[in-house]
Length: 132
Image (cartoon, rainbow, N blue to C red):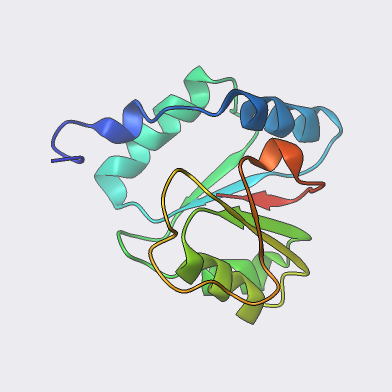
């Protein structure tokens, strides 16, 4: 139903997170949004990012339920944030030095990953680099 209603186009935005991302872009950091969406949802996600003024952030889709490991391994980011524990574990396994789980109002759909801090928003985490 989420896909049928094109909800990827209308996901709520955490205001301080958006401010943080704009700040990183303004400082010249590269920001990559790695999203586990399929091709049709990718277009909607990109439109939503464009509407938020995030045209300078690069959207990479890994497919529904896809792994972010290989993308993270190739990008070698300094930072990664996600709301799902499985993607946090992939980041740790890919060698990302700083990984946080954004609470997102849910339990993360899995077991906590040792060493990964939970935050309410990326706006409160000292970070740069790759974001979900």
